Length: 271
Ligand code: A2P
Image (cartoon, rainbow, N blue to C red; front, side, top):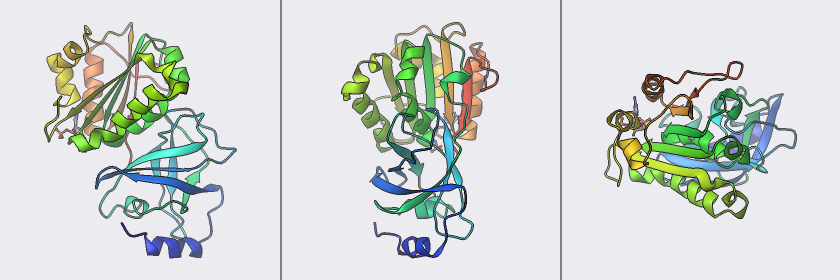
């Protein structure tokens, strides 16, 4: 892909807005023609909890377009990672997908969100339900030792249209298991990936797999119960609605930062 010449030129032409960090891109990896990951430098004063999101933009206009992005790296990481979709004609992602190492990304100073360990009541098993780029906040949480201190078992489900869209998640989990720093605490992590439109070893929407019981049979579990199980959901509006209904059907109730519950929900923002 050619560097975005317009982006480079315009970046020099516009001042950085007040109250915003201007950070440098340190790496970019393209997974498919729809998905990419990038990492930026981390400002020393930037604090967040694993699982939170932040607003990001590009220095390519007087009033840059900002969009909410889940931070995919854990809170201890020296850099900040994001996992993004490329929306044709999307006001931010059309330009963002062309960034290169050394380019500047703008980031607002405050991170927030409900997919955090503090918004859940204590439990034994944590389910992370994701579709598409909704895996990003879980990429942060499965690299945070605190998640494993709070739960004996973590089950990350990731559903995409086609197998190539599962690569980010499978590489991530493999890396967590191999990393000597994480391997000690990540023994309880399981990944359950499915596709819906192109063939792969496991197929179907996670909501259908819960309904049929196949998810639980595959994992040798009895099901989901409000005493031991906790849930986090991140995906499209329709996926959130249906997965939330499924968890409520098992007797779980939605929580928030101010009122922790047995599951929490967040939209995968950019569309
Ligand atoms: P499907 O292919 O059957 O629509 P998208 O890229 O559109 O966000 O979809 C990502 C994944 O989420 C796809 O595998 C899609 O399945 C699945 N999905 C879409 N809507 C729902 C829903 N309401 N409940 C569960 N999974 C969904």
